[in-house]
Length: 443
Image (cartoon, rainbow, N blue to C red; front, side, top):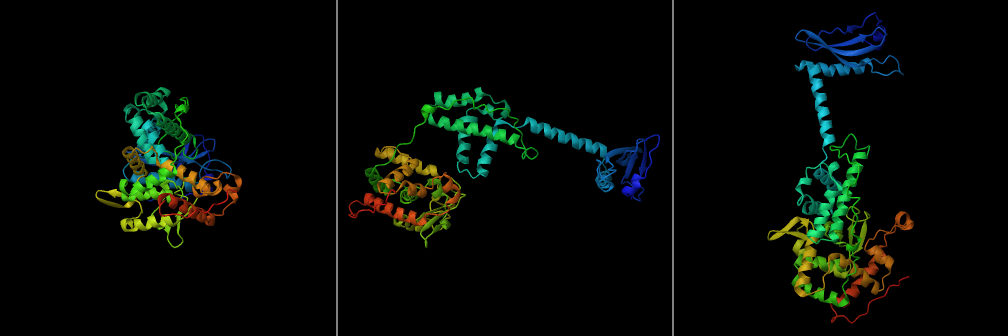
């Protein structure tokens, strides 16, 4: 086998000529060097098909450290790959041309791919990968209001979707179905999906790895205004009398698990329902009397420790005989039994509340209003806004809270939830309570 020094020693002639390495292998092809009259040298793989000699360029010989090209070692490795194809019975040039054509076709298909349906699926998949809990709901909204009523959009290229297409989707919701506020939500989901596609196409990290290119040049939803007059700031909160009435009805009007979930949201100071539902039994520390929510479950991605007051402990003790064999305290129903691996979906609670309000003539409210109700009444109980925000794990974006204050406020949160426990007890058992609650300074 030649060394680089030996290859450099090949002298140019008046015409191009080849030097071929001699081997004892038959039917494996040969490693060859082409020497040009100007002295440049190129590596080739030489083989025969039906007695006709063929050459395939491997690369330019790297004459010096600063020149471009490849070494003889690298050239011989590539030629060895071609030799293996030749031994398998391929006409190497025909095989390589076919592979190149396949790659070109795949690149063309990739460039022409990127349907609207794939864009929506890619966006939902990214939401899931980012730990967004609402990805499943968003996917259902796309089917219910977008691709379901307008199936032609499924196969339409994302880059060919127009402002008119998106206006038709939203106009149907608003003008035909009378769906107002939710139309703004669907608009925001569609806008976010197109923004996702634009970023994916233009992110250099994705350029070689992305399976689909959407080739978007603009976001067609950007031109469609948000319907500001459809947005209503939430103001519903339950009065003390309503809390008393609701609590008294829960045992009769709600199921044993959904009812206790509603009670738990009150007892724990208005935690987010999705977060409570997603907590398995393992996250409840009964010795320390705390619920530990990891950052992977919380909206602001920060761990959140919630003390368990007497009401919360009582509810959990009632749940143990029902779901201790399940992974989650608030286990989902399956048939006539319980799903040992999955919790109740949050919409179940909203549906149960809606049925209750219709049946009892109770002013309508939703789970989000429970959080507002609790925060309002905790203020009435004397708890400061600061501790209420920390109890409900609001994102605190001031520099001090965000970057420097790593104290968990567990002692303060425990004291606050004990005060809240007393306040709730006065409401839910008014005849049995004659005590007065402690008041915490608002300073």
